[in-house]
Image 1: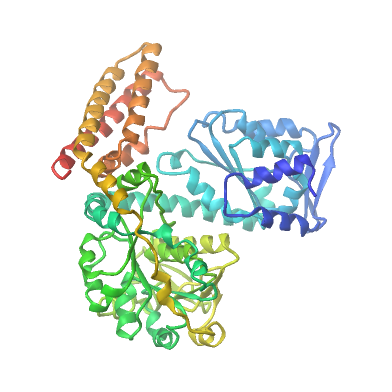
Image 2: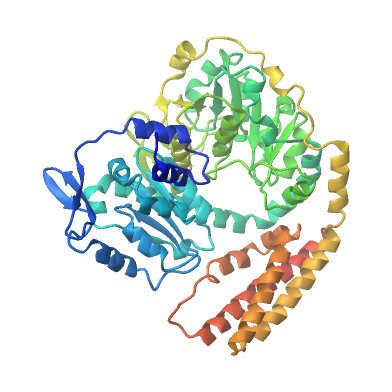
Length: 609
C-alpha cells in the first residue's frame, strides 16, 4: 500500500504517541480527497511551491523564485533565541524546508508543527524531506482532520514551568491569512496549556505543605489498598461492556434532573464526584463509586453514613481527614515523581496518574475512560454559573451565588445557545473536556446536564431522552468490585515499609548533597576560568541527578516549592550575547537561593520523617 518513504512518514507521524492509532491515519489516507484547492508549482530551480486557491485567489505559501533562500531567512529570525530548552510551535509544514532550517540551529530544541490543511500534508506525504523531519526525533507533526487531537498532549509533554517562557510561536508565510480560523484554534490550544501551567503552579504554591502532609498521612492507606490501574478495562473483564456510565458533578443544573437518575440507577454505573455526594444520597441514589482528589475538600461532604460503603478513588494528596468516613475499597492514583511511587517502582509495581485539567470531574472522566466505558453521560457538568448559582443546593446545604459584576467572570454559550457566566479556571476545565473527547472519538459522550456551558464533542440530550434511548437493561454492578487483589501482597508491603524506615537516613543524604552544592555555587560565583566553570557545573549536574534519584527529594522540593518555581522560571534563560561572567554570577546567586530553600525544607522535614 505504501512505498518505503511513505512508510517512514507514517511511522514518523505516529512517533511515540499512542492517542491516535495507525489505523486512523491509514483510514484518513484512504479517504483523502483532492479538493483541487492545493497545487504544487515547479519554479525555475525545480523547487515545488505550495499554492492554495481560496475565494478565486491564489496564495503562495512560500517564495516562488527563491524558496530555499526564503526558508532560511524565515528561520533566521529565531537564530538568537534558540536554546536547548526552546520549544517551537509552528503553524504549517509547507515544503518542510523552513522547519529543516530551524532544526539546524540547535541539536536539542523541540518543534511542534500544526498543519491546518490535510491536503497540503498529503501533497508532501512520501517525500524524503518530510520523512527526515519526522525521523529526527525533534519534530512532532499534528494535522487538522487527521491527528490534531494530539496537539495539546504534545504541548503538555514538552512544555512546563521551566521552559514555557522560552516558547516561540512561528507562522509560515500566509498561513494565518489563508487559514484564519485554524490559526485561532491553534492559539486557543496554546493558551490553554500556558494557563494550565500557571494554574498548577499557583495551586502547588498555595497548598504545598498540605500536599506533603496528606501524602505522608495517606501513604500507609495506599500501601494497604488498591491502585486505579487495577481498574483498567474492568467493565470488559467483568462482561459489563454495554453498561453506560453517568458522571455526576455538582453543578447547579443537577437539581433539575437528579430525580430522573434514581429510576435508572440499576441500569448505569454512577460515579459521583465528592461535592455531588450529598445531592445524590438525599435523592435515594447510591453511587457505585466516588472520587476525591483535593487536599482541602471539606470533611462535611463525607459525613452521610451511607458514604462508608461507597468505593472511592483518591489521590495521594487528598484530604487525609476523610479516611474515617470511608470503609469500602480505596483506589489510589499516584504521580510517578512522588515518594511512594518511587518505592513501589523499586519493587516492580508501577503506579497510574489520571490526566486532569484541574477539576475532580476531569479526573473522574479519565477514570471512566480507563475503566473501559464506551458511553459516558454527564450530569451537573455546568462548568459555569447558570442563574449565577455556584453548586447544586445540597452540596453545602444552601445556594451560593456569584457577583457577576466582578471582572473575573466572563460569558460563554450554554447548551441552549444562550449566554452564561463562568470564570477562567472553569474555562480550563471545559477546554480539557473538549480536548479529551476529541482524542477518544470511539467513546460516546452525552451531555445531559440540561444547563451550563456547552462542551464541544458531546451530544446534548435530556435525561428523559437518555432514559428512553440509552438505558435498556439492568446490571449486577457489584461484580465490578469482586476478586480484585490488593495492589501489594504482604511481602511487597513489608518491603515498602522497610524502605520507608530509610527516610531519615535518606533525608540526611539529601542534606549533605544540598550543603555541598551550596558551597559549589559560592565557588562558581567568582570563577573566571572556563575549564573550572565546566568542572563545577558538571559537579552540580551530577549531584542534581543523585538528588533526583533519592526517594525523599520530591518531598523536599514540595516544601520549598516557592523557591523551586522561582528557579524554574529563571535558571534556563541564557542570553548568547550577554557577558558570560555576569550570567555565571547571576546563575550562582539564583542557584544558591534555591538550595537555601531546600535546606530550610530539609530542616522542617527532619522533624516529621
